[in-house]
Image 1 (tube, rainbow, N blue to C red):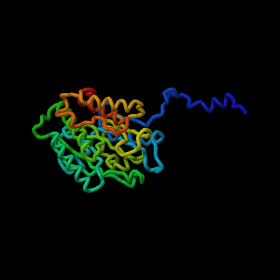
Image 2: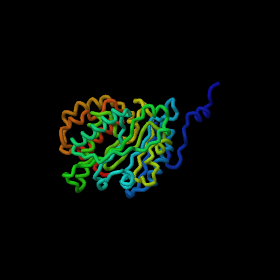
Image 3: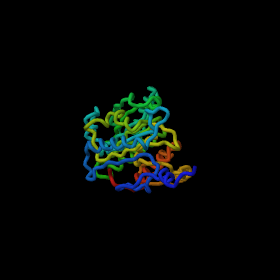
Image 4: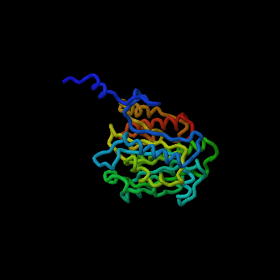
Length: 321
């Protein structure tokens, strides 16, 4: 029996428009949300609302055969300076004069010790002093069995410039960002470590978790002293790369949908252009931080790496967080 026009219309019609919603703008995508205070005022409610937005993005993320292991979720906030001063066992310089980042390190004890020692050596070569390491409080039982089977060891690294560095003004803060950038790139190329971020301005918590697990796993996020004026969250639906702890979003500058169909060509051209790259803003020989685009990364990760280079190496996008 042929299907009636009314029935066919009901099957093919999507949701009706209402208010600001227009079904013509619908796209398949990972889940992204941003909560921000337009005046730049740090508040606990920003973090709390961003995490709530993340939980409401469950329909945008994905899980594998293990329903408790997500393709990846995360949050980017401002560095919670007041909170960190209360929880680290060492003295911190003024806000903006130290960089902090969560490190994904090897779980094997010998490899862990080797990696942390190498990071400290590289920091010295990049003109940075290691203020200390903080054991990042996590609750592994919140994660799925698959996520736990490949889970790294978590530490928080704090670095600052040496005592002879000029510490006044925005140029000094950007110089610290660039030194931290070089340390992070070299550490990731030369040791078994991954930094979701290493910055004086922003801090990223992410992993192979579900939307409901992020703040339960990373216990910092449940602390009422943890405040920010921004909260950028992302729920990942992995399509062109296998899920992993490092490939969760946000990255250092973006939370992105991916699906960049020209990625292989983009990476090849970026690799080709490395011999022509030059900037006075990033100190030293740039070849020490090549490849600029990590070969095994996702398309979104590669996009973030190039955007970061434009920001730090060319002085673009200079609005501070």
